[in-house]
Image 1: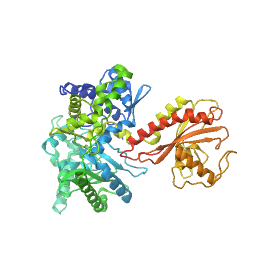
Image 2: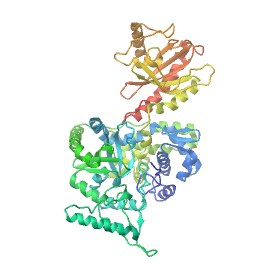
Image 3: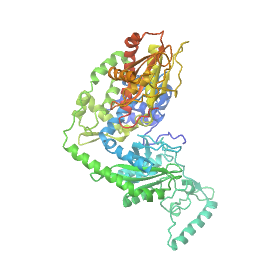
Length: 630
């Protein structure tokens, strides 16, 4: 997929110059540090989550000292991690997108329906919402194949190059259509949408090519007399073989120059208004390779209270389905799924109307910002931290908040909350109507796409490194696969005598601390083939079961020379939001380094603290998606 990161008005990206222009035009009460901080987050998102500090300086047009202060504040908040000269987006940043998704309700209510449909059809299924003249994904149920869908939650796509786009456009008014035309003119290659390949430039050709074109148009008119309308989609090779909903002859424009007249061929999306009219009539829409060759999709709207709440799409490849085959084969089943989703929304709305509105507890922001200011001094930008906290005031049961409710939820003064909301509204992250504020889908553009594919091993990696550096011992992350453990993360020390295990290594679970904390979480742990690996290995099933009971009660396991003579390790489990153990982390060392008692007294508290930080990040990252374990 080619690089596609240039800016376009009204989309998810902008250049340094447009940022400067936006700052010059902001409302007088807007918070400039918040605007600049969000600009840094957007640049990091466009850079797939990592950028050098000097790169941020160039891409934002901000002074290096300003970039340093912004990234220091974001790091203090846990939204970025400073790795040498690089700034890296951290999973904690996903709490901003989670606030939008929780307030939206749709992922919580409809994700299971989309996942079940994907399993039944063995095709990828996505949910999307409209975001001005684009669409943004809120859920992806992707099939794992050699050629699989690479779109992520939060990715922004131009409406005209998708199947959901025409459906959302059926509800557009004159203002929305004007914005769409303005964006198309300003960004002729869709470079403001980094998630999609660039759209081809308009192609000009002259008289020699037109003679051939006249022959094709003549042939189409002849066939039309025989009852076949070939006045659309006449071999438009510049659009990758796509049909465009109007005649080539109707698209001719004469231009002076060199005695030759020229005509612009249609490009991707030129038929969007016709596709919208067809979608309004049919109630569904197709994407026949509009994004890239081979990608086809069928979409239907999911309505709530008469309006489109989201659009569900079944996505495939032409090696499995043509667009027409996708429609003919899967449309009946898609209609059934949409009906079930709409029924779910109606039932939820009825239940919510009988439930008292929730009020968020104060966030403790004042205490945290005060401590941060004391620690970092002028490097900490308090107004940036406060402004981002306003986004987290929204959530489940708090989709609409007035100024007083935002101030109460954040612990901010009304005047401070008001300035933050004015700024967020100016940037397009909040809408206001009748003094009530709502988050917009654009919030998902703050780091969610690159972070939505983060694995547990990637989440844990910086915490493992920090723990190893603190204790000067090897630290590992592992998952349980049957009756074995598999190492998925590893930080080794540089000692002459150290534990040397590589990522991917598998070991039996029963004689390892990592294995025991994960086996202890199972109702019926597999305790077969307990072989004596050392003289100290426990091989009696009853005795091992008693050990696992104690591990479950104490929350950790210490194994002393049962896997290998001279190897001692202590491990604790890593739990997902629901409390289920999904992995484990250990600290391993030579038995001469520490006694078992010292391991419990010195290592275990540090290990538990590190795993607590891993779990905090995992719970944020996994709130609306499945986090891959490896």
